[in-house]
Length: 165
Image (cartoon, rainbow, N blue to C red; front, side, top):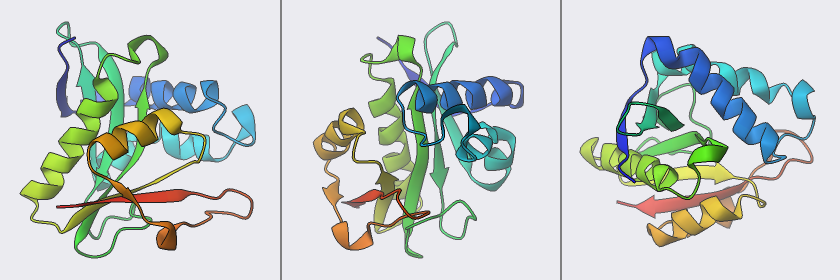
């Protein structure tokens, strides 16, 4: 499948936020289900786009298949990145588009952006249950960095990965 990566458009903010929220909910990644406070951040595409770079994967008809937030150094969206690293967050692909390369294309776009920014690495946080995403990360050269693992709140352990650039 042909996948194009581009910045999200203003008129797509709401739809991308909903797609991201549904991907996380559908995969059981939110401890409090539809009442999880993280849904507010997942849906806040307009805010993320103002403070970071939100990329979308689209098909040849320009239908959004997935999205990701690329975080440059100094962004308020950075969780685990050092000052010379980029980070990406909230990678999500719609259920209908899974297995068609959109997720990997979004990660590759973040890698390309971090390289273009002259950074030393690209990092991310992930849940242990996100095994399909872990396979993509490893295939692209990311390695586990258990010394950076963290909990945004007690009981939600996040694993970290890093790609040296």
